[in-house]
Image (cartoon, rainbow, N blue to C red; front, side, top):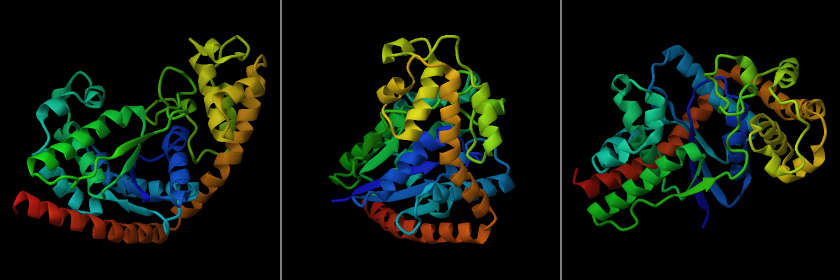
Length: 333
């Protein structure tokens, strides 16, 4: 049987190298495997857990779709849609929130990180959005979900909710229990200015990240100014302890070149960072320029992007509406 793979990306706009190497590049590989059925969701309901400008959100939804396609996801082979247009997601989230336990949500570390010290001012949506994430996954009988380490806890919650629902209503295997697809290497790309922090759009310095729409000169400048240290490049993996910036640059090169971390160390060991940066700049330009150009081209074709979403939403709704009808019968509606 084919794997049924579901994953979602928030339409935050201005996607960067961390998003590409940590998720989208992997999505492309999964979607090109004929053993997989892939659904990629632009999770705009998740996006509004924090305040959004409506006009910018609409554009960010299109930009996320453009990035999927420009990176190599074929909308004819995989379903691409935005969450808000399939009403089953919101309805299933409510029903599952009546199954989930408060104690489970209270253990979610990401809420504590995102809400910060003044969690009383955080939205209820930010607190409960892991239940919506569970609904997203379970509506499509997903067997596998690509997740980073920061989302692994949410997938475990999804599994708990599915098992409890099945047990509460005595419907064995109604909700499939999804397995994680964890990218072991290069799933977490760090800031170019601080190797201890994840690459992020929210960082005030644009020099901290490579945006997928950056031009050649911008990439060259950012890699040239990327933080390193005074030592030469390590000769073995043990020497990367306490050298996060060196590890990050080697990791980025390895992912783009489809090389193991060890092979990249062997290629550059003992050399100066200037040589690594020169090679890294070139491989970034070779990989990202075609994507950047295609994103910019697609963003001018709004009707084309909207049609992809319309078609994808229809396909997704055909699946999700049938599942929600069965949920109605089970619950007693």
